[in-house]
Amino acid sequence: MENKLQILLTEEDAEAERVAELTGYLREELLDLDVDDVTALTSGEVPPGARAVDVTEIGALLVSLGSSATALSQVLTVVRSWLGRRHDTHPSLHLQLGDDVLEVSEATDDQVAEAFKIFLQRHSTAGAEP
Image 1 (cartoon, rainbow, N blue to C red):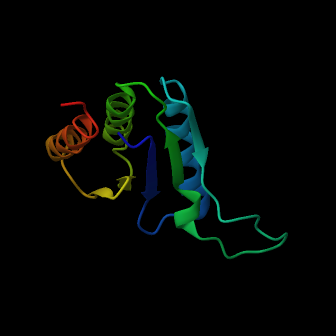
Image 2 (image 1 turned 180 degrees about the horizontal axis):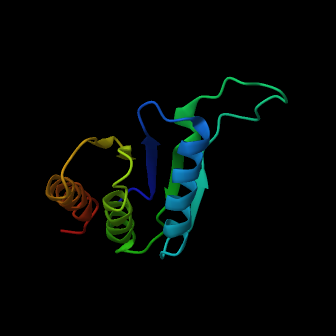
């Protein structure tokens, strides 16, 4: 199993501060799991006084899953729960594990649950011994 999951959170027409706030909340919840680390991804320091910020960099997290067999399942459960509580907003998620990408945008809770289930199934057998 790949051991690094990239999560990109975006929200249409959202201010950079709003995306950073949402990403921070998600990161806090993920840090409570049995994962090695959850790192906010950046392309580098923003120069003092700079106004242009790439919102995609603000909403990017890298989850180091470690060697736990259940870490990916735990992460997906937390992300799904977190997404389900965002009734006032409509964030979109881009999850990437190795070459596999899952994008969730404007989906019902049932659609998200099914997409996450399929994503997890694809990775639960990857690298398994015959």
